[in-house]
Length: 186
View 1 (cartoon, rainbow, N blue to C red):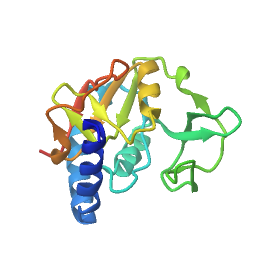
View 2: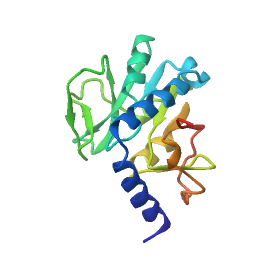
View 3: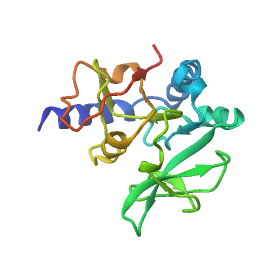
View 4: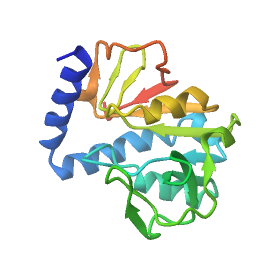
């Protein structure tokens, strides 16, 4: 087992054991901090995600972004193009459906945009991960989707995690992109 595989297995096991009340309370604390960052204040576009397997829950934060008239986009897999892109949402109560890996996605491809569309510095990327290291590199689920998004992404990249997910190193590869900042509940 490689170092990355070991960290992934450890983080998945730890995350599975977190009580939902801790996920909810810690997520609120994390996003209360994110909402004060200049990255968020200056952003006109926020790219979020659907929390999966007790990831930091960003949905209340996305609702706040919508109330502040920011455009909010969520990942959506496009079967014909065989790639992920993003669809704008108007509400966090829109219908969502399980996507390619069981993660919820917007139900429609209406307004689907590839990652290349988000080139402005007014874009805020909210990025989950299994672990983040001291240099703000992230370790994801192992499929490489966020690695590809982040290589082309412009704007601020804000990693979000629980404090126990901070590690010394995630053994980044040459293609990995560090976050501008990583926010946890502590």
